[in-house]
Image (cartoon, rainbow, N blue to C red; front, side, top):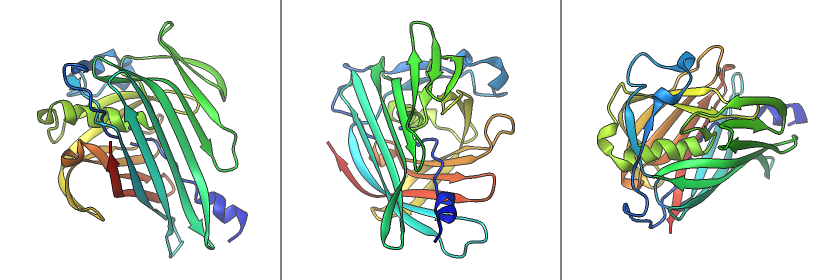
Length: 276
């Protein structure tokens, strides 16, 4: 396999990947916070449910391993690999780490690594600094500046406005989990949730649609999940993201699937979990 083919296997994670479990902080220590999508710029509002106020409670701290399957158009066999997601929080601060690799010719190649750190305030996740590294590229960082309500990027001189509840590409997974963990009744088929997500050079609003409940087959056994979709949105983001949250595991994202505009599909599915 030549270097060009290896480069094709890079996994684009948004999520993010989705934020992954909650510390032992009690509800009294971290009460649910109201998050309203009305704080987002009007251009990215949805027609319904985007103004709904949602309570949030991040899931408890946990580390879990993922099986990674990467399928590319016109390539008969998938690339296989592993990933790890570490989520730690104590009711006041959090740290999150995610890395993904694939196996090529008996060698594990790290494709992607992302780290995030920040605070837990009023029950919600508040990123301060996010870093990401892709194979063959320099590490980039994203800074959330709450004094000036701005976001800036090491890879671009652009400065964008920071909306309430803004997340980075992996903490958004935990923010979605926080919605169900605070109140399962907030998950209803057809409901839309809009969250600003800071990426490498910009911070568009991701529009998530809650589809329905599904049973997911995993190496942990069958898991009852809620399936959430972020459809592609021309002019904002071209890929589709599917996320499956498991209520019985504190609403952790137990499967994440990224479908790129070229048809390549990367799926990460939980295979082992350790909860603090």
